Length: 356
Ligand SMILES: Nc1ncnc2c1ncn2[C@@H]1O[C@H](COP(=O)(O)OP(=O)(O)OP(=O)(O)O)[C@@H](O)[C@H]1O
Image (tube, rainbow, N blue to C red):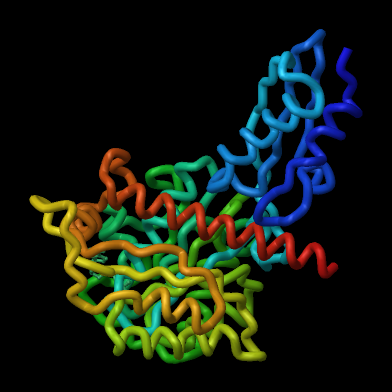
């Protein structure tokens, strides 16, 4: 008869490759059930978007086979509980991920929307705040032009209900402004409006709250990073030197002592052009490798690249971001990036826990 101790002993030989500790020490092995030579247990990952899910499952099977017996019938339930280390200042929200760029128009909102949806499709609970006061994109990208979130008064306080679409909760500054008028707000008004998107909304329980920041480094960045302990920032750039130079400034702001937000990594958008009729051909029209070089310079991970493809802009304009088209190869590019972002959040949370 196999014992629980044998199982834990065997699985203590399996290391979580990112967190560099074994699964038993990390308390990731749970619900062990043994019946004759049948064994069942759960592996509780730190995110449902874990890119190493398959690898960890195989390593567990191999460990049971090697350290106990190849005859054991193993059933593994790969599950997850997203980690958090900071009180994000928003009750129920475990992690805040800021999506930023130096330059405008590099595809930051496209990345933020597809990242939020991809994380949600892996099984995480996700919200998206569009805090881009100069050009809110969520109303168009989610087919929600003219939508107005419900607001109610609870004990004298305003409660805004985020709008739910495609499985995620959404709030955009664009839901509260006239799309045909510019927003001539001064610093304090911007700050109040942005804080309300976090504080006055009923976000419920969220694993990840993705925040689409305006381009550059301005009032919104200061407000968000100073008011809410952001887990980390994801930097979107295109390959041109002008975009990279501005991205570097944006990164510099997050790393300033007074701001101190970790940079989870760099994403290169519009990395190359691929014509639909020649999918194997890649034309590096804006230069090659800039995003990777930038990531290396700041010693942050390169999270992936996304080509310039008509389908990405068309799907955004049509109110259905491309990750919703499961079979589209571009959807998998965004899924890979979402996994890498979730992985970095988990690594960061584990590091903070270790220091504590
Ligand atoms: N990889 C891509 N391929 C094709 N079109 C793209 C790609 N990424 C973004 N776009 C398109 O480029 C335009 C700008 O993208 P987006 O609004 O996401 O950029 P942004 O950086 O958020 O802009 P802003 O500075 O206004 O905040 C949009 O029309 C979008 O659909």
